[in-house]
Structures are given as C-alpha cells and as structure tokens.
Amino acid sequence: MKPQYRLKLFDFLSCLSDILDWISPLLNDHHKQVAMIAMRIADIMELPAAEQNEIVCAGILHDIGAISLAERMETLRFEYTTGQAHAEMGYHLINIFAPMSGAAELIRYHHVYWNNGEGSTYKGRPVPIGSRILQVADRVALLIDRKRPVLSQSEAIIERISGVAGHMLDPLVVEAFEKLAEMEYFWLDIVSPLINKQLEANVKLDTICMCQSELLSLASLIRRMIDFRSPFTATHSSGVSATAEHIAGLAGMNEYERFEMKVAGFLHDLGKLAIPAEILEKPGKLTDDEFNLMRGHTFYTYRVLEAIKDLAIINQFGSYHHERLDGSGYPFRLKQNQLPLGSRVMAVADVFTALTENRPYRKGMSNEQTLLILSKMAENGKLDHDIVELVKKHHEEINQVRIKAQEESRQEYRTFLENIG
Ligand SMILES: [Fe+2]
Ligand SMILES: [Fe+2]
Ligand SMILES: [Fe+2]
Image 1 (cartoon, helix red, strand yellow):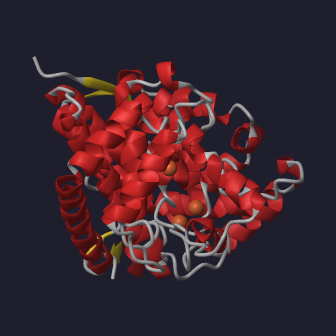
Image 2 (tube, rainbow, N blue to C red):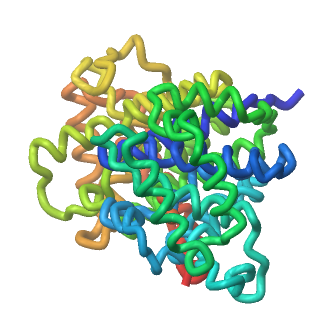
C-alpha cells in the first residue's frame, strides 16, 4: 500500500503564519489577527461553516505574496492602493495545492477597493464576499497600536473604518464589523496571547490525508514560497532536491526514501521565510547580526515541520543540512552518529548546489573547484567522506541532474512572473 501522510491543516498553517510574521516585531501575529477578525465577521454575517473555514485559511496566509520586509511594511499603510501585486502573487503561490485553492481565490482579491459597488467584480471576475471580509479585517488589524490598550482605541478605529465604507470597504461588511465592535471580547481576542488557541477552538479544519503526489504538490507550494521570493534563490530548492534525490539513489537509498529526499529538498530552507528578503539578497558579506539571523533558518524549518508528525523523517533529512559530522554545525550540534544517511546526503547536496549554481551576482563554480571544497570539508570532518567520494565519482551526471532541474524551475519562475504581471 502506498504511504499516506496526515496533515493537520490548522497546525501547519498556524506555524507557517508565525514564521511569516517573525520577519518584524511590528508584524507579530498579523496574519492570525486578520484571521480572527475575519472569522468573527464571517460568523456574524452567517456565512456557511465551510466558507468561514476558507476565510480563516486565507486570513492566516493572506500576505504571503508580499515578500520583502519593505513590501510587508507597505501593507500596513491604511490607504494602500498598490496591494493587487502581492495579492495576485499570493494567489499564484497557493492555488497549486488543491485543499487551499478556495483560500487562494480569496487572497487574490483582498485589496480590491469597493468603489461604491464597482469592486464587486475585478477584471470581469466576481470578488467573493470572503475577500471583502479579509480586506476589512486587514484594515482593522493594522489600525491597532500594539503599545496601547486595545479598548482605548476601539472607538477611533470604528470611526476610521466607517469613514471609508463605500469608498474602500464593502458597507455590508463594515456594518457587520460595527456590530461586533461594540463588544469588548471582540477586541480583546485580537490582541490576546491566546489567539492561537481561540482560533483553533473555533475553526473546524480537517486533518487531510495526502498521498505521495499530494504531499509533493504541498512541498512544491512551499518550495515556490521560499524560492520565488527572490531571483537570487529562485531555483535553489529545486536544485538541492534533485541533487539530493540523485545522490540518495547512488548511496543505495530505496525508492521510498528517495521520494522523501525529494520532498525534504523542497522544504529544507523553509525557515528562510522568517528572514527578510533584503538579507537573502545581500550580495556582499553579511554583518554578524545578519549572519546570526540567517543561522536561525534551519531551526525554523525544523519547528514548522515538527507540527506534521508524519513528516518526522523528512524533517530530519531536510532540517539538519547545516549540521556537521564533527558537531560544529547548527542548530542542534548533532554528531555523525546522530545524523541519518539522508541528512548527510542533504548536507552534501546543499553545498554542491550552492557552489555550482549561478547567482545573479556571480557565476557558479567549476566542477574542479567544487569538488576541491567538498573534499576539504570531508577531510575536516564536516561532510560525510563516503558521500563526497560518490559525488566525486559521479559529479558529471549529478551536475546534469541539477542543471536540468534548475532550468525547469527557472522556466516555472518565468511563467509565474508573467502570470503576476
Ligand atoms: Fe495584503
Ligand atoms: Fe495584511
Ligand atoms: Fe540552508
């Protein structure tokens, strides 16, 4: 029987949204706050339960298309008229995973101005009520000053929101918000440290059972989220994944394990979502602080994937790629005997890909230089000697596999950019 992977959708989305909001303290819990407000509005408007759940899913990831820190901060301007770009990007990132396609549609239109009813459609397509709810929720959330008691601000926020009903926001949704806004609990829940518990208690999201191809499409969604943030990294995870899968085969891992390596390669840099794109794209040397921030990325990968019990092995394969055999790696300082074969292969695949791939500011290294560095790292007890020997023996074919995967993903990136205009 083919393996199945269970995914508790809420746990996973909740971790992912935390990561997206770690990028700045000003954004802490922003995605959850929007999900919470949207959920309450959808409830008081008596939308069907399935639709409410979709709205929460969309809320919890709605700004996923705003990739740089600058862009995220821009979304916090109240009169924000250029939001369509990140909304469209968010849609194209998410809609490839079937269980999230409804939420993707809502994200797509969460910045369309109501314009006295003109905004009920956008480019000939209907703007769902869920998108209009998200928009109100988003504007309410950003008006909350995190340094002051929320109840001291509610009146001013209501006034501000009501002032743009009809012009920016759908008046029916604003009316529903006004009803809720009379009640203290509505406000207190938004800024509560227990927001996660409260959301979880209200949303009934199923546990999804994924077959291998569904898991691969989820992993692809995440890969695109990570890589497409920047032309600098646009094909990195595809390269690591293909390289890792191939070396795994050479190292004798079976078909099932190779599949897990492929998925792990897609996910290995997941934690980079918590790192501002400005740092990822910095061509020169990172400052100590930037470097230390960067070093957190595998830790975040590990913690997010931990939320999915059935991915425990894949998590080890992916998240340990900066651990070193002599215990000098991070974040767990694991040693050789604590690192499964897949993790040791992934570490080699990551270095191999990082050295050989082209970046906008430099060409990839030659095979000779790459193999020299890998050998040195094996000699110094950083990388697995036997795996490096395998790479030396088969470097031509491994490199071809990497190039092919990265060319395909470069094409996918181009199409993606065309789609978002
Ligand atoms: Fe947004
Ligand atoms: Fe937002
Ligand atoms: Fe990494």
